[in-house]
Every structure is written in structure tokens, then in C-alpha cells.
Image (cartoon, rainbow, N blue to C red):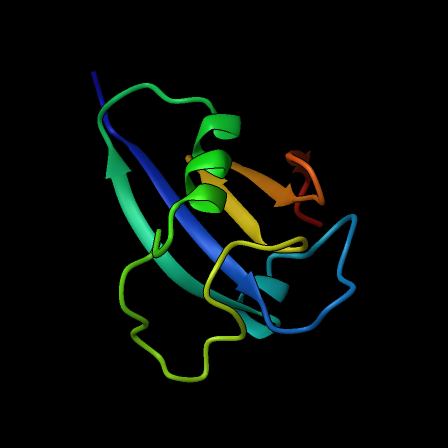
Length: 96
């Protein structure tokens, strides 16, 4: 079984929703966490883990991180799929 690469991007600008572009991941999003998961896990469970843990991403590598916990508008990449964090849960999004 192969590992699933998961990345979490924090949004630097509030109010981003809907479709995002690949270029946006480099401009208005910061990559804050990356890992390879060997266990099969649903994206909903992953979101809950990030939401409920006190420090799910460990120490900040950059001091100017826009926030410490996952929030609405942030993006979770699981393999080749992208999911935008909503107020409750996540929604699969297509990159433009």
C-alpha cells in the first residue's frame, strides 16, 4: 500500500471561497504542514483532527503564520485532490 501525501495550506486573505487557481497556492496560501500518511483516513476525519487538537501543526516554521489552527478558507491537499475548509467540514474544489 502506498502512502498518501497530505498538505495543508493556510489562507493569508480572509473571504476566499469557491474555485481557486494553482497560482493562488503560491500567492495567497502558505504551506504549513506536509506529511505522508500510511493509514487510510477520510478527509473529514483529518479535518476533525486538525480542528480539535491544540497544536495540530506543531511549532510554526514561519513567525508570520496568519493563524494557528485550521480555519474556513484553508486548503487540504490529499494526493491529487484539493478540499477547502468550510465553516463545518470540507468541500472538494477544482483547481482552475
